[in-house]
Image (cartoon, rainbow over all chains, first blue to last red; front, top):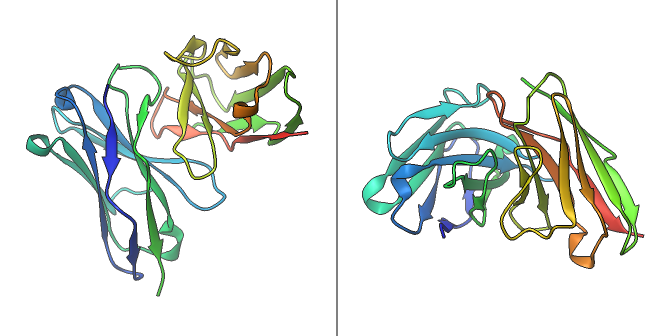
Length: 119
Length: 107
């Protein structure tokens, strides 16, 4: 059973960058995709992009293109989401999620990482 | 981008009620739709994938149906632990998108 554990809460100033990590348990890390989804206060869930942990292939939402980088370290079973040029509108809970069973649904979610952008 | 519109956005119901939530897609998405529920301060939990397949471990009172542009999530007999916000999500094309949510509260 895959479990995802994310890094802790972050407070950043406008213009800064944040890097959130997502560590997966188990030995099947390279066989599935990891997504990043965020949720601003009172807003709907918003998909940011995904990485296939095995190939390293990525796909990003155009909304974040150029500002987000998703990467992984297979030796550490960890994926990362790096978001640059932060503004107050980036204040949100950031989740990683995976579908290790290849389903059309995100089966496993991390606990979420709160990122607050404030001067 | 494919827009997903959920209705209603808010629903007040009692334990034991039958509840139906609708998700409409702005263009056809075949059966590439998932349903989640989310409780305050928690991550979403997958209930249904591929429009109608119950995720392992999810109670059978949850069911999903539909294809193309119109989908429904039905809870046959609402239980206390089902009071939450429900979201649909499409996997047909990028960017993946979510509906605006349906908050189910206790009457």
